[in-house]
Image 1 (spheres, rainbow, N blue to C red):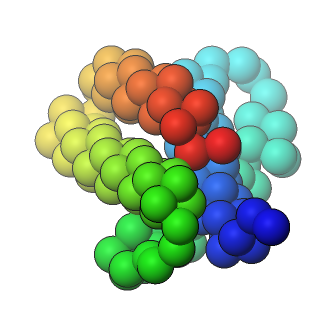
Image 2: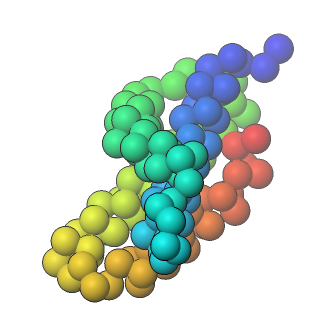
Length: 121
């Protein structure tokens, strides 16, 4: 039977990716209307999701070698996304006019994390 703890890690990374993706979309939003509620809601959950990802990725996991490899891959992706978000925040705080470029850099990191999802599914 598949270790149920994997679902917790998968849920955490998928939620984090959802919030970061929403952040990128909101950063690029140029419509006259405000961003849709689902995007705003996902962005509002970002800090909590980063905290969850940080707690999960800083802990230890004991399981089968296959499950451990999956968790290690998810934790590495979560840490990388956290670093990318911090870089995004620093960039827009120092030069707010570069928000679109900062969002593009964050989007690249999200894409790389998503590309590795085969190793943790």
